[in-house]
Image (cartoon, rainbow, N blue to C red):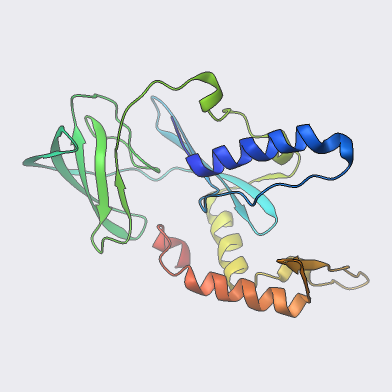
Amino acid sequence: SRFYSRDVFVGDSLMNNAIRQQKSSGKVYFDKNKGKQRMTIKKFYPDFIITETTNIGFDRYEYQDKRKMNWQITNELKTIEGFDVQKATINAFGRKWTAWFSVAYPFQDGPYKFHGLPGIIVEIEDAKKGHIFTLKGIKNLKPEEVWPLETPKRYAKNLIILDREKYKKVFQTYRNDPMKDWKPTMGGAIQFQASYNGKPMSAKEVEKMTKERLKKENNILELDLLK
């Protein structure tokens, strides 16, 4: 199974179409992609092998998440979005979660990395209600509505594959120093050019803006990435 942002998928499709249609002119114009979640989660069954592919800075990373889902299933029942569901709880990713699953669809799957219950997860939220996933519908997708399983060609050459502990260090390093890759090393130099809404920006201005954005992102789903 695959978990990804529909807004990003649609935005990428529109951008690719614009590039194909306009490349003959030598200039391409397109709106900024919608969707903030740039990661793709892939689950390979029946072994529940989970792979996350995501961006950090200018690089694209991929790693396997081998942590197990240790659910506690209760006898509590209710109805959500027309589904008869049963309650389960779990501690995962540095948070405590409550899930409601339906055996009407006996797929051991759910949003994000969640899996392993006797039926599909219809709703799941963390104890502080900072993250909530709700199943709104089930449909058969047309071929053009499915994001290809393979890594997009534009990422394939630069994809960095590593284990989760190394990914965690890269993640923490970027949050502490987002401009690290732009800083010149001994014997080298980096030419920096950037603009925002058409206005040129210096490296210090970009660094300040990036740090302010990261500071606002203080409710990441996997809190244990910060520890």
